[in-house]
Amino acid sequence: MTAEIDSKITESEWEVMRVVWAHQQVTSKEIIQVLEQKKAWKPATTKTFIGRLVKKKALNTEKIGNKFLYSTDLNEIDFVKNMLSELFDNVCNRQKGGIMAYLLNDSVLSFDDIKEIETVLEKKQAEAVDQVPCNCVPGQCHCHLKNEAEENENGKN
Ligand SMILES: [Zn+2]
Image (cartoon, rainbow, N blue to C red):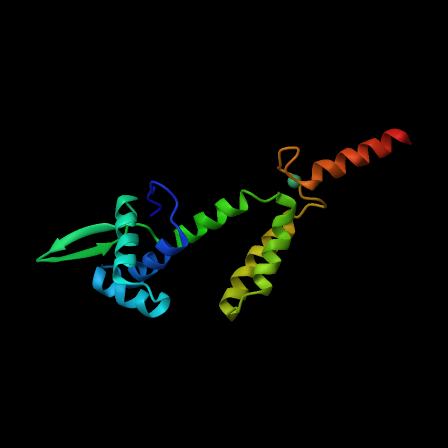
C-alpha cells in the first residue's frame, strides 16, 4: 500500500520507521531502545520523531491500557521504491543506466537477485535504443548544450 503522507520524511524519521516496519506493532519504549543503541539518541529525541511521524500520518497510534502502540500502513519496499523514483526524476534519462550500473556494482547480490536482474536485462536488451532521449528542460542538463553545439557545428558545414 502506498498511502499518501503529508510531507517527506527525514533521515531521522526513517530510522524510526525502520523499527516500526521490523515489528509491525511497537511501543515507543521499544523504538527508543533500538535507536538508543544505534544512534545514541535520548528518549526525548526519539519521541519527537515519533510525534512528527504521527502528525504526518506515517504512523498510526492505538492506545492499549496505558501504552501506545505504533504501526504503519506504509509498505517499506514500496516506500523505498517511491523515494528512488522521486530521486531518479531529478536525473537526465541518459544518466540513469550509468547510475544503475553503479548501484549494482556497489551491492552484494544473491543468485536469485542476479536471476531477477537478468530477466529484466533480457527484456531491456530487446527494447534497447542507440541513444536514450534526453527528458530535461533546457538549462538543466548537458544534453541540450551538446545538441546545440552539434547543430551549430553542422550549420557551419
Ligand atoms: Zn538531459
